[in-house]
Amino acid sequence: MNQQLINMAFPYHTRNKFLTLNDALKFLWQQDLINVGELAEKAIVKKSKKKLEKNKKNAKGSDFKDKSDSKYSTVFYDKSTNYATVSGLKNKTGKLRVMVYEPKTQKNYFFIIPHKVYAPYQHTGDSLKIYFTKDGQPRTVYRETNTRPNLWLHECSAEQWAK
Image 1: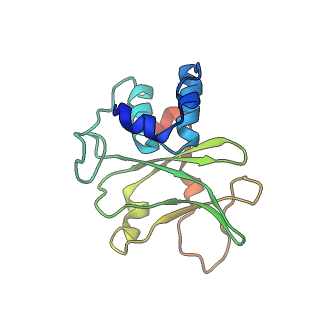
Image 2: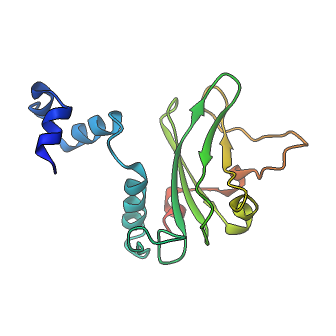
């Protein structure tokens, strides 16, 4: 850890607060200083009881030896729509293990999305979207003209997410 950088980024009184690990992690999360994607990968490996093995850092196409990839997203809210975006699909080869954090309800949602579901979006640079209502509840898009897949069909438990 670069102590000089820490000293420059945080004032003395912040650095010297007596914090539990939980408090420190919460603080770092609020400051957007935790790489949540890495944290999700670590959680998957631990939750799988180490049955899932991570690929070496920066392996092309997948995060895990079973060719699956971990994705993390937070629900985005604006005036007209509310959704979590799953992007970076271009070089993926297996299923996506997606975790979505919904800040209004502070709930996590887990998905396993098969390759055949997201394959049409890989080469267009497009992304997948998981929709929510204004109050943070899951929402399915019902428009007849909608060609996007209903990703709520692929929701799963945290245990299934890490299998």
